[in-house]
Length: 91
Image (cartoon, rainbow, N blue to C red; front, top):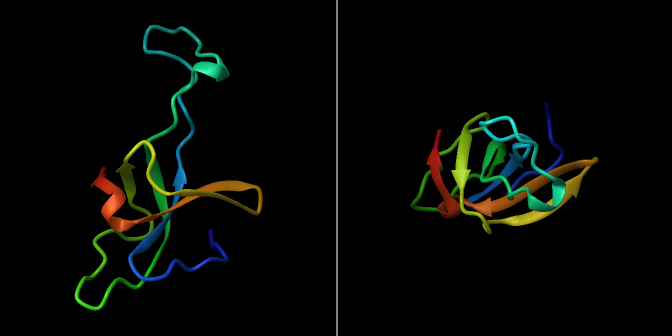
C-alpha cells in the first residue's frame, strides 16, 4: 500500500483505526456518540531531525492523543499527520 505523500522532518502519517460500533456487552453505539479513535497504523514516516532519529516505522500500530495531528483526506481515505512527539506509545 503506497501513499503518494512523504512527511517532512519528524512528522508521521497515520491511518486511524475505525471507531468502535459495539460495546463489550453487545450494545450498538450510534454515530453521534462514537468517540474519535486514538489508535492508528503508521503509513509514512519523515526522515527525522538533525539530532533525532525516528522511533516509529511504517506498519507500527500507535496510540496518540485524542486531539493530536491534522486531519486530511487523500484518495478517499482519512489520515492524520502529526509530529512524532504526539505519539504516546507503539502497541
